[in-house]
Image (cartoon, rainbow, N blue to C red; front, top):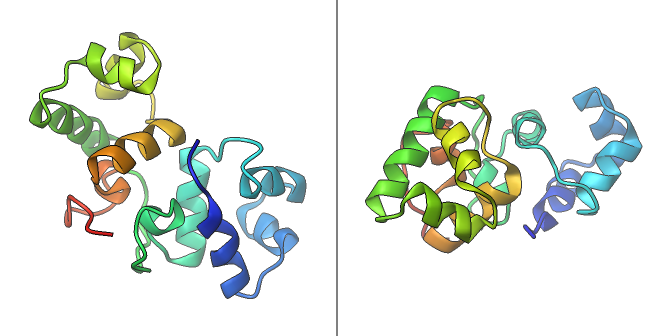
Length: 150
């Protein structure tokens, strides 16, 4: 499972308690607490909301980099789906091979690439962690850098 240690660190560095963050995100404190403690999956669209509230990158929030870049941008589903497909082909992965790596099925990958759904947070983390590609890049929030150097 992905490591959300930076979520709590970001919150504490900004001097906020869980209730304040929940209010900023228009959710319950208990929902936020479950995400922060990694007891529930932080949905990618809500994780981006969190990143935008605190002006940090997905890469930093997901603990994929130590660099605390200031990014405030939404997910671009058109770029995201195209970039996932481009990345997959660049690495010589079929939809089936990527699905096996993510322990899902080919139709899930197909749905991401056809813009029917947004890449799930754990899948995004697994791809970025293994291939050192930027989550912000894959989600269409930035154009560079494409790859991370932690």
